[in-house]
Image 1 (cartoon, rainbow, N blue to C red):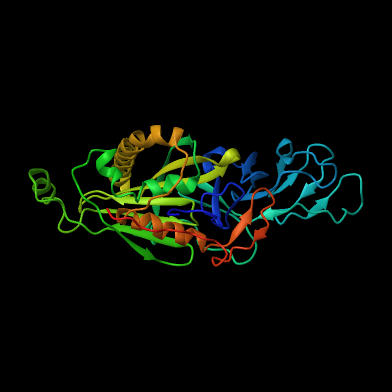
Image 2 (cartoon, helix red, strand yellow; image 1 turned 45 degrees about the vertical axis):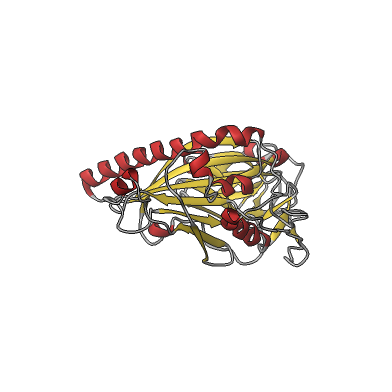
Length: 349
């Protein structure tokens, strides 16, 4: 039987790739605030201390199970509302008002960082990897505009596939161009896809060639099988959009769009960056609008891959090679790619 079945991670509702995943927008957690979050079936709290840094931890107090989002930030730590126990950023209990010494109590904390206006949480054990990034802007200071948050009625892996589906640009978006996405494995957790075709030999193509010296700029970078960044636009002006995705209950997707550009100095530079971010938002909304309908009704079943699906196949194989964790418990699960049976018999076309 052709297609994909019995995968180890890809399109599964009970597990996800271990890595950096977005929890909240940075603007949602002001200094001295604590917020509730839910990530891959696990209840968390995220607080911002007096030093301006965020920290994520399991949500329930080890004393009686009170939800710590009901508590308050104290310095760089967090106090439980119920009995005023204080927990430091590392999760250790450091003060109980009615006791001379605090008990050996601990809340589980998770590595936490911020980039592009989002709070990211590392969801696994072991060595912490690199935060998701825009390849062209990896080593420069950036400005970001947090855009639309959305829900899709399918798995995040399926949402990411859409951006590297070469044929849908013709069938859905009615763009008179032919794309060929070349795959590159940057690292174990990062995979890129870049278009290699030039504008077509047509009136529209000849117009495009005024703005492109080579292939049409369209590239994707996927991180931890969950977050994607797209770079597109003419040679003189590239647009950068991040789609930070996470799986929610029922195997659906909650996504956050972020518009990114390099930081420019001076008043005129800052104004130019704001204008460019708004233009990027318009571009992103155009592509997102065309795909909304199918994601609300789709039941993914990849039974008949064609040669035009080569990038999708590469992505599936990449996800299958990642370390995996179980839904809710976040415990590592066996992710030996040899155990997964990914059948990808390509039909002609």
